[in-house]
Length: 66
Image (cartoon, rainbow, N blue to C red):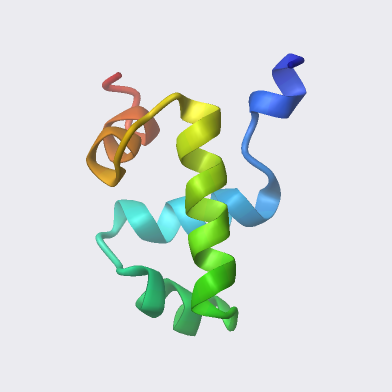
């Protein structure tokens, strides 16, 4: 994969911004007017791109602590 393929898409970045604030997938979906399944898909993609196993690791990655 190229570097661009590892970078979060704009939609993933919006989801990540709400994740950092501690929102659930359902709450993020409501904020962004998306289905919870779409948010779940973005979170899964972010986990893969960041090489994380869970949301806690993803939050650390997002904050530059990992």
